[in-house]
Length: 40
Ligand SMILES: [Zn+2]
Image (cartoon, rainbow, N blue to C red; front, side, top):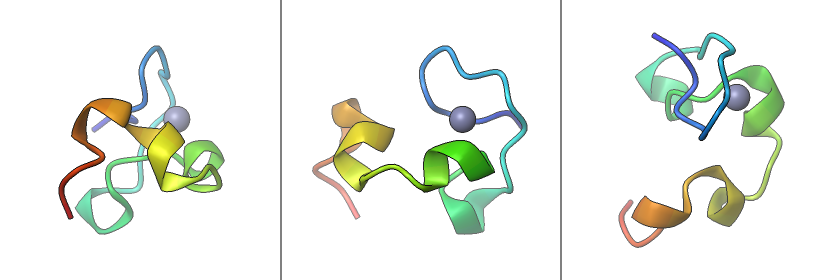
């Protein structure tokens, strides 16, 4: 499973961490995935 951030090829940590890599987990939620920011 890779990071869901656009153009990011890093490996994510799984669903518990929103399928983001360590690098993008540090970003504000709005920057993690603008297209699905309405959920959660
Ligand atoms: Zn990433």
